[in-house]
Length: 616
Image (tube, rainbow, N blue to C red; front, side, top):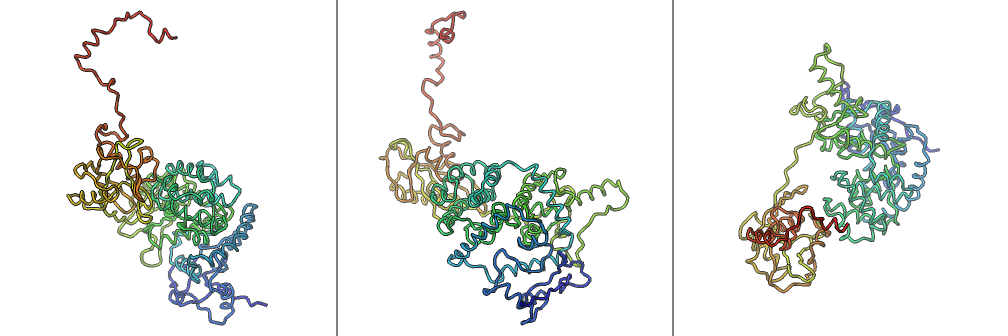
């Protein structure tokens, strides 16, 4: 008979002072006991398990021969407020029945598990560090113990109220979006995961209104993973042009090829394996795919969820710090609904996008405002300002045991009554983007066979705007003769000898990327008398204007081309489109010509029928 490890039941985290109110909240009658001992645990003052004891033996067997737990299966008897709880342990605590959908998802996921293990063993992806999951859970326990209860959800009743109110609102108010329709109506799990995957990648740093058109065209062109895997990177960049953050499309294409070529066409079924196996899939994207497509009870944290949770729990510290980020992920995991994980994650993001907005939140329409500490703070300030009630209203505040709370705003940034709930979240001031200058030239052959053509060259396959096409460019000093000389050398490298005297400076274009403010000095050069060139060296192309507008070029290059079009001879000043020369008969006649025309024009009586009326 296997000897069972004794359970430790201390509710107070060891090492905390007796006077400190920051004790680890008990969940399901369990305390903060940890299963095994390590040097790192001795440093934080966690309990020691003697070698050779029953607890040590049970922990060793749970870890398995490799010394680390299997992904997605948590056997730890400890959890602080549900933080870091796996799907299995979460179901045991909530004691909710399985639905048919979740049962089917689990069966399909189990069939995929063996395949993913084989891929992990043969893949070049680095396996997870032994005890990595255990270390993360230990950190969460220590963090929860050091956090004031003011920033936590108290008990299952408050968590349940948050879930029910939010899901009820989501079922009633959710937006009708193409990726939601496709995911909800798709039975095949791999197709559903692909639909969610594409939408989540496109929505990173991009507004929903912009993504809708791109997503629709993408799914029409590549409706399945197999279709995307067989596409060319050039085609992917061409469709992605204008959406920004171009590496997203490239990695999405790489991920599709890996699924088809190495995973048998099946998308990994858990957040852990999604993040390990697919390029460009981070913690958020993996959690979104796993919860929405496969029903895994895992939380997600994006910009909208950060804003919602920081306001609901009055977290005023820098939201981009590691401490706050870890706490937000812990809260998200605690709140995720085991029966509708994907819907709750989408509901939290929907709430942040439509109601709990950055600048003008609509608190009166918020389904969880009764649980929102920021809203409670606003109401308290309003009551104190109106003095309609004697004394101070009974509103809970953060009361750390000693010192400054690490999740509250620093004393140097006090509450601003004019901001209301938008006091949360607080972000550290962003470092301004570095400034660079580039000289670029639109080189045109006006008399080329088949119509005017312009020269484009392809950028390197790595770095900024990797693989996209652009006009010949060089990074130079902001101005000076050296700039022209460097640009001429670059042009001649692609097109051979050129008439240097025709190179004209046309203007500037300033385009800001995520970390670079790039100023383009725009030049133009037209090869009027030269013999048209029909071929280009590798990495270059001569394109017509129509081909340029459909090519894989960045938004910055389209701005550069508009400057060239507006300044070339015969162009209408200020026009953003290619000018159309008017026929000579449309020109306004001179005064003398008008007099002659009126003299020789035949007289037509007013009551004579018109040509149109005669034709009728």
